[in-house]
Length: 209
Image 1 (cartoon, rainbow, N blue to C red):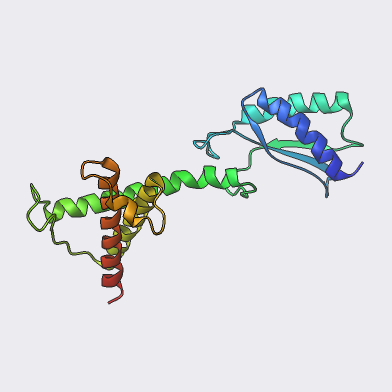
Image 2: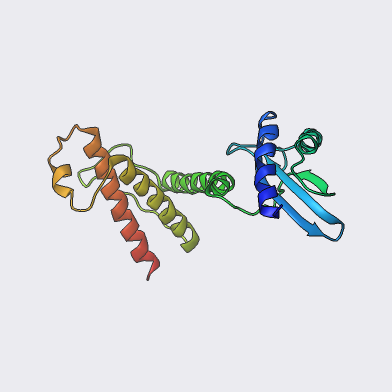
């Protein structure tokens, strides 16, 4: 039987065994190594909060290994002698699927965006936000070093992208937004979207000089 065929059958069985413990299969390998044929099954726990340190325990691996070994022997899926290894991928896991990438990056991305937003808020508070709007609108002066300005720029870009997605902003739709009444919350949010664009341009211009 071809190794690829063995892997497919083992994955099907392993998924069933792992699912009973709230786990999923990250990878299955069947290859010849120095010790002979090795069947390697890697477990993972679904969900964005899963990490290498707490998602799969040693007991999980031991239980799945025991149950999987029994089922494989009964169904006679793997030909000849082999060594079964059940483990978790670990911190240096490869990102094989889009879901893997999303799970192990989205938390860091959220943290980074939150930190950038806090930097902006702290800067505005240090600058002293006026208690009310003047005839010139909202005007305040801030002095930023280059790294902080780049952090502000990233934060403005994230906010503007989120607004554009929520409002479904499209190229050439300026007339639509201009026709909305002043008290329409969508128009007010669009004004913020445009203001963010102005701030982006201001920061880009400042950073380029």
